[in-house]
Amino acid sequence: MNEQTLSPNRSGLVVGPLRADFGGQVLTAEDGEAYNGARMAFNAMFDRRPAVIARATCTADVVHALGFARATGLPVAVRGGGHSVAGYSTIEGGLLLDLGPMKAIDVDPEARLVRVQPGVVWGELDRATQQHGLATTGGRMTTTGVAGFTLGSGSGWLERLYGSACDNLLSAEVVTAAGTVVTASESENPDLLWGLRGGGGNFGIVTEFTLRLHPVGPGAYGGLLMYPRSQAPEVLRHVRDFLQSAPREVCGGVLCMFAPPAPFVPPALQGAPIVTVLAAYWGDVETGADALAPLKRLPPAVDLMGPTTYLDIQAITDPGNPPGRRNYWRSELLPDAPDELLDAFIACAAEATSPASTLILGRLGGAFGDVPEDATALGGRAAQWLFHCYAVWTKGDDRRHIAWARATEEALLPWTMTGMALNFMNDIDDTRVRATFGPEKYQRLRDLKRRWDPDNVFAMNQNIPPGS
Ligand SMILES: Cc1cc2nc3c(=O)[nH]c(=O)nc-3n(C[C@H](O)[C@H](O)[C@H](O)COP(=O)(O)OP(=O)(O)OC[C@H]3O[C@@H](n4cnc5c(N)ncnc54)[C@H](O)[C@@H]3O)c2cc1C
Image 1: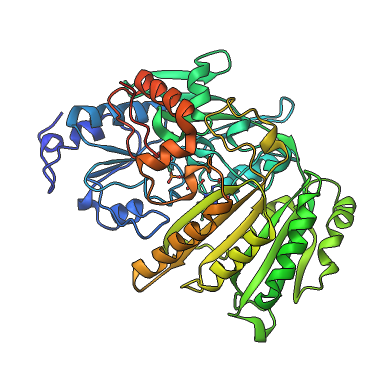
Image 2 (image 1 turned 135 degrees about the horizontal axis):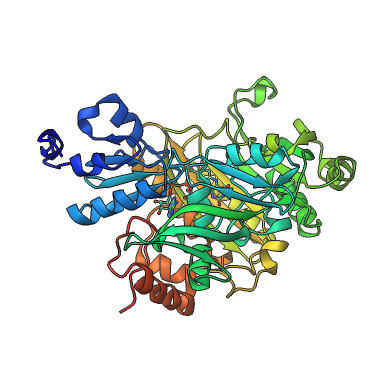
């Protein structure tokens, strides 16, 4: 090692030993624009400055970077797609281990399996699997990472038919806190696989996921219907009644939002509060048209529902969710959606403090509920509905927008149940983690953490402290 590799950078950190044996980029503040670009996360609320960013290209890079963090005592944040709304995939003064360059996808159409590296985002994986008419439950935005999404639950448009993403996780290659590489599957370290299915990034760094695939598309029937917000009471009841009895091939929900300034929206409605119905049918396109026809019995102001493709449905919320805005989210599961809940939901939506904010009521049930409660770390299997309160803004007083999201959660609390996946919220403290998993699962997760990460090296996450 030459003298330069051993000299400290401006923050006093000697990064030479990391660079010396690392295949990817190693960036510090000295790298200017490259460093600034690499440190940004989806949620602009977390504008943090890591001491060093290591952009891994392979499992060996991950092992090496983790060893460097241990040797230097740097705290570690792990990044897949960078979408953590709670800011877990960025860190002030620590090591950001960015797995973004690890992009390999290997589809086995005969076995209906895909092996995928942790830098892959859903748009990339969906394109690769759809070439074979296959898919697995994936993110509702093309830029969400496969990694954090799957480990934290993975709720997508296919979940009523094929379960959550974590239910489709068959095995994983994992770099442990000790720097060893192990497999988690039903036959090897099944306890670890159980924890990876919903326990988040607590137990190790996954360097390869094997996911089950299913026949889907490429054609589909679905899309959006839009109504003025004044029609919200009848629209919500109509959609609730329809989705309540719809087959599991139908997914969907309603969004209280503001109409985009798009050419397909009549000028009088642009920027106005609206109710959007989003639904799709997975199967034959003609059958889908018949299955979703009852939704249109309430004539919409904008009808964007018709024959489409799986890939288009997967990208349908992309335009409304650009990176770089401030996000504060609260979400809960619901066993039922009675009229009183719908009225409270509409009243909360009317108080939204930003035109970018959205309140969503989505249908669960189906295959999501077929999985026994104890089979995975992810719970809440009895839920039939869920709500997401997304406060999103660019400028102004954070407190006002955060207060709206918190007040909405508070107002809807009487109709909720525990178990909501922690991927969907900010401000996750120990009480919230315990409540989500319930006392028995929480203890099981703590025991697992003690076995696989006794020193809590992986602490930038929905953290489970090691059991004593
Ligand atoms: C715009 C937007 C849309 C979303 N839509 C959905 C949706 O439809 N359904 C849904 O369920 N969720 C959704 N989410 C939430 C999403 O699932 C989580 O934010 C998830 O963490 C994103 O995964 P990522 O890889 O992009 O996250 P990152 O921010 O990269 O990672 C988040 C955390 O996951 C862990 N992690 C990531 N990669 C690894 C790895 N390889 N090994 C171990 N731990 C790892 C780490 O703890 C990391 O801090 C959405 C989020 C956003 C911002």
